[in-house]
Image: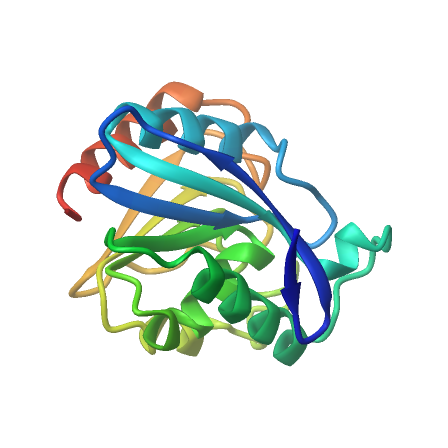
Length: 191
């Protein structure tokens, strides 16, 4: 348990044998840290020499299903990263809402990269409500793994933003092999 300005968060820590980095991942708005894509990213990161922390936001620890407002999510995330900070380079990320939090806080957390699993570019059917500015504000390398038929949209690649499209939708459950390969290759370049 880690105290934050908005209640306790929970970090599930997994240690690599010879760590060279730390990957901190957050869950989606309505899900938890056992989502298949988060578990796959954890396993791949451990194999690449990253310690991994899967983080449950305070609202989930308190048993609520509806996410807290963005400023609360961001403040809690920053507190968790500060608590976990050591001497290793940090990559932050998450799935869906967790990816948005990691993007919005990348500068403040000192992340050397941001891993986005199913970044929700816009609400389903509402492309005019784009969240692209959250991605464009990130000044470190970003990897986005996105389902080709994700109703939350397809983020564009950018100068330091790689987008890997896989079969499937927002769950990313249909192609764990491609997801794992993309995450592993990208993490190898971070530290």
